[in-house]
Image (cartoon, rainbow, N blue to C red; front, side):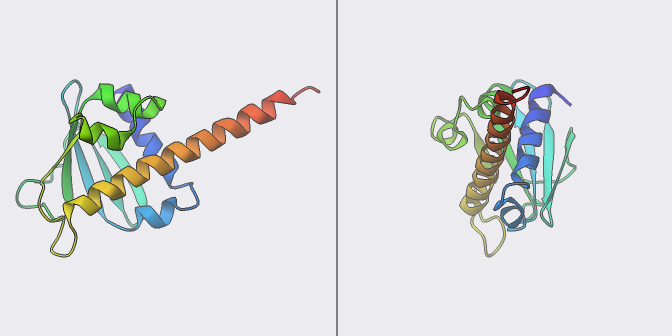
Length: 147
């Protein structure tokens, strides 16, 4: 798996350690197929509050047959690197047309596609918050080592 994709996926895994993360992840069972304009594709499966990821195609037909359980995320490795480094806010990227989601119909008969997008953004935010908290705790502890 390419470095940026793996870092992004691990950021999502960090969301599960956030106090709100597990409950948020359990809100939907969904596979997100990432179609990168400048890198190899990968997918993230979020099911029963657990996150699994792998390089390549998930094998799900997000356009037709499997639209109730899969979405495609069109973006770039460059954007994901910006998100992981904290230089880009993922929801801003949507308005800049740097990230897109398909299909743009209902995620299932009771759930709008917009709810899936908001859920995904929330998982990214929780992952970033958890990673920043851990980094701060390590930094704070290092200030007093050996004193």
